[in-house]
Amino acid sequence: MILPASLFTLLGGVGVLYTLAATILVGRWRPGTVETVADGPSVTILKPLYDNEPKLAENLATFLGQDYPAPVQMVCGVGSADDGALQALNPPSAGEDFTLSIATTNYGSNGKISNLANMQRYATHDLLVLSDSDIAVGPDYLARIAAAIAQPEVGAITCLYAGRGDAGLWSRIAAAGISYQFLPSVMIGLATGLAKPCMGSTIALRRETLDHIGGFGRFADILADDNAIGAAVRNLGLKVVVPPMIVTHGCAETSLMDIARHELRWNATVRALDQAGFIGSIVTHPLPLAIIAFALGGGTMAAWLILIALLARIILAARIDRLAKRRTMPLWLLPFRDIVSFLLYIATFFVRSVDWRGAKLRMEKDGRISAGSES
Image 1 (cartoon, rainbow, N blue to C red):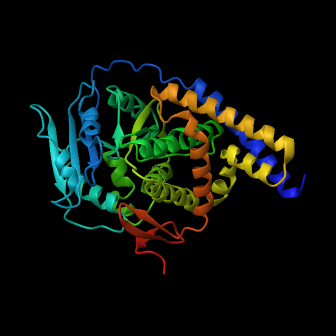
Image 2 (cartoon, rainbow, N blue to C red; image 1 turned 135 degrees about the vertical axis):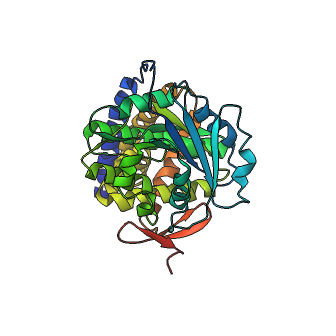
Image 3 (tube, one colour; image 1 turned 90 degrees about the vertical axis):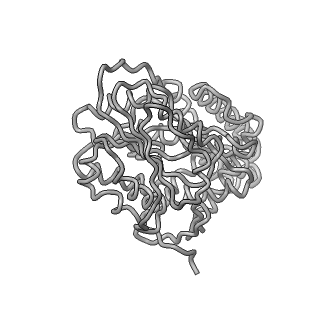
């Protein structure tokens, strides 16, 4: 067996062990039940919107349909009066506290953060819950957040999420990247203490905490704004907690190119935050590694590794689907999905600018972004 084949066989073997460890962690994940609360802090939900995504109205409705005893306000924000997201905003029902913000000030290159900074002035409650527009939640979502943030030394709450395809087969393939690749990697990171996540699926924090970290404007030129907010909270000596629940991330990709654009941006963000960790994450791709080992002359050992890696990945995917209570993607597409993930992982090392909802953003050395692609 030639050296390159041996190297890829070794990496693939480590990847299988990683996959088995992730499978065990997923199997042990127990969301459990949340105790019914008689009261709780009043909540303002901040929803930065952009364009009319599939199931946008349904996703927003899950945040208003909460089993929660205290007042809940929702503030939705758009960047302009002609934003397509406005088509999905139904008139609020009687008793609903709903406010619309149309951005008036640009704070930096990160459009989402500019939107949030404009929305903040409409927030009337002290507990702020930020969540991306493509997130859907269960009726106990706010109760779980309130219980978690009431614990001592907790400064912010964030949530794990699984993917859901909302726009046909390509969107289901995109969702599988979240459910079968991203979610288990975060679970492994949490279990080992290597990951300190703070994700756009949910960032819940008190108004005074946001003020202490400098408000939203501080993050207006940072691509990984969610991670930066979490780091700023930790720098105050507070914890960012992940409660035992999983929310849903709706995917709207309609082509392979859409998947590539979105995932290259995600990958580039991770690479910018932790380059060594991103390089090490090659072991999260056991099936492509085993295929490369076989192609390089790895022989029978590599052939067996392909089979073992495929079985391990299928078992992990099935467990994630059971946890998410839905089939994310037909499992016969898993080899294709894994190969796409690996190719995009390799391509990320050559990316210097990213596409964010039609805008080209250049990545700077300090983790910040600026408008325009690299020349």
